[in-house]
Length: 277
Image 1 (tube, rainbow, N blue to C red):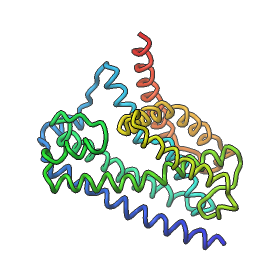
Image 2: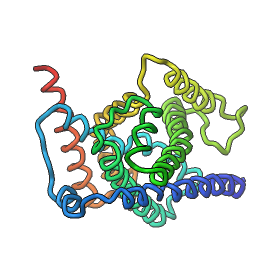
Image 3: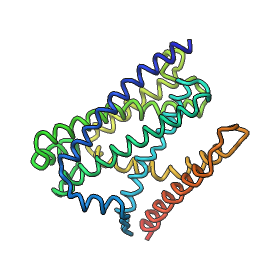
Image 4: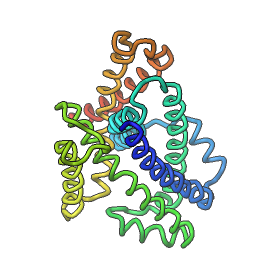
């Protein structure tokens, strides 16, 4: 039974890895956009801070989409289904490090491509169609096609991950049977939440009064506000030897996590303070 589950998860992982590799088109898009090298290096390694609400919201949203809370549920649940033990903890740590390095490289090149193709042209993006129109004259047909492929693949990756993360989180909360290796009849609650999340997402997308771009943007800001809570819980669990045994978090991990918690709390505090003024 465990071998069958492993093969199902492995096949699913291969598809996800393949689509993640396709996102390398963003790296090509960033190169084709030809950013000024000196300005790129300067803005990459020299921190830039502002006290405006818009800057703090954008910074918090960036952290929210990088340290995405829903990914904690998704990755932990998928690893549990695939490994079914902690004997492969070192392997999981290596996989996570490689995955985070790749995802942050992609995020970095997305920012570069977006800055050169959209921000430089002062494009006002309200939906995907306005994004397409803004990209064509600025990026050219080749870069536009690469950027469009990246957006399409990102959607295919995000839809099951977001819906699955919600289903895993709700199932864990209520103690339901969970996992995509189960039949629908064996994990009804899990699949109801999974399919319900997809339906709710479709309804929101079809509502003309809600901008899909704004929904994507501010949902990541909310994710950023949730980060300190989840990091705090993770630190307490990671330091608890009764729960983690010999796999307790290291001092470096605790310091790094605490720093991320303080930074996101600071951004949230700045935003709330300025909104209350």
